[in-house]
Image (tube, rainbow, N blue to C red; front, side, top):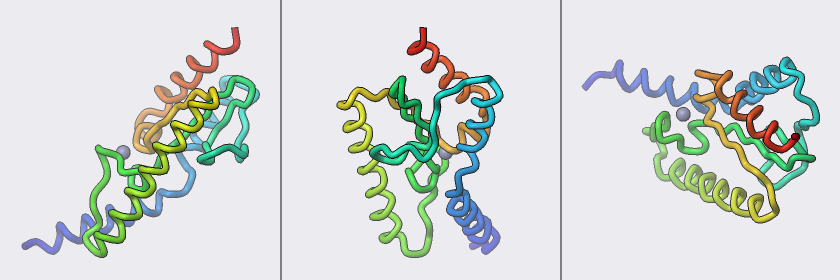
Length: 138
Ligand SMILES: [Zn+2]
C-alpha cells in the first residue's frame, strides 16, 4: 500500500489531462513552416477538426492526445470515477473511427500521430508529413 504510487499516478493523470492543449501540433507546424512547406491550414473546417489540413492535397493531420484518445502506450485509467472516464474516452475513440471512415470516403488522406510520438520524435512525424505531401505535389 504505497500512497506514493497513487500520488504519482494521480499527478501523471493530471498531466495527461492538462496536455490536452495543442502543444504537439504547434511543434509540427513550426517544423513545417521551417521546411518551407506551404498550403496547410489550421482551424480548417472539416469533420473531426484535424489539427493541420492541406486542402489542395486533401491531407488531414490529427495529433491525438494520449489520454483523450486512449493511446495504447500511455493511457492509464483514472482511479476516480472510472466509469465516467471509460464512457467518455470510448466515445472519443468511437468518434475517431467514424471521422476517419467518413474522411476516407470523401477522398482524404489521413495522418494520425499520438501526442507522445510528436513530443518524443517531432522530426519523424514531420518527415512522414513531408513524404505524404511530396507524393501529392509532383
Ligand atoms: Zn501515447
